[in-house]
Amino acid sequence: MSLSTVSIHDKTFECFIADEEIQSKIQVLGKKLSDDYKDLKPLFIGILNGSFMFASDLMKNVSVPAEITFIKVASYSGMKSEGKTRELIGLKENIEGRHVVVVEDIVDTGITMEGIVSQLHSAKAKSVAVASLLVKPDCLQREVTVKYTGFEIPEKFVVGYGLDYDGLGRNLKDIYQLKHD
Ligand code: 5GP
Image 1 (cartoon, rainbow, N blue to C red):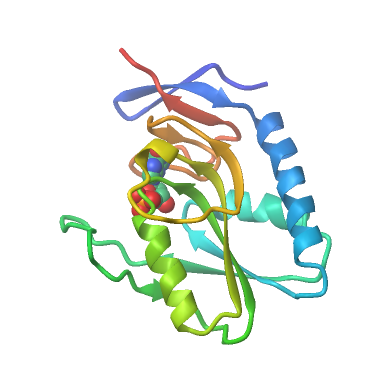
Image 2: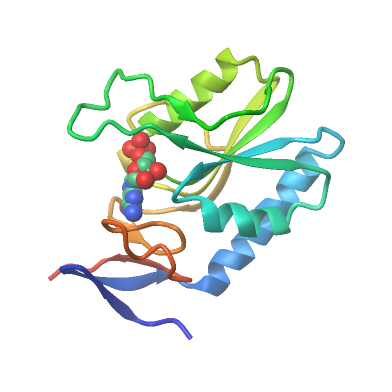
C-alpha cells in the first residue's frame, strides 16, 4: 500500500507514481533493451546515488548477457554547472569499443547527462544510449537524447525510488512530488 503523503524535513510530498506503475514501466524498458542489445553484451553504467534502485530493477528485466558498473559524477556545489566538465569517478572498465547504456534516475536540465555522454564518447565507446526513469522535458537546456525514458514529468521536485530531498527519501518505494501549500 502506498502512503498518500510523506513529510521529509520541512516539506510535504504527495504520491505521484506508484510502485506498481514504476515496475510495469521497467518491465517494458527491460524488454526493449533486451531486444535492442541482443548479442551486443552491453555495459550498463548506473549513476550514483540516485539510480541505484532503478538500475537494480532494470537489470532484473534485462534478459540478455550484460554487465553493470556504477560511477559517481563530481558535483560542483556553490559553483555554476554551466560549461563545467564533470569528472566521472570510479570508472575502471575499459569502455573502448563497448556498447554503453547510461542508467540515470532523472534528467532535468540535461547538463549532467550531456557531460557524461560526451566523456563516454571521448573514451571511445562504440555506442552510448541513455536510460532515465524520469525526464523533465520542460527543463531541458541541452540536446540530450534519452532513448529509454520511463516517465516524462512536469517541472516539479520529486523524491523516492532512489531520489532524495537533502539526503532523505531514497528508500521510498513510490515516487512523490512536492505538494503545494
Ligand atoms: P541535470 O544536470 O539534468 O539538471 O540534473 C540531474 C540531477 O539533478 C539528477 O541526477 C538529480 O540528482 C537532480 N535532480 C533533478 N531534478 C530532481 C528532482 O526533481 N528531484 C531530485 N531528488 N533530484 C533531482
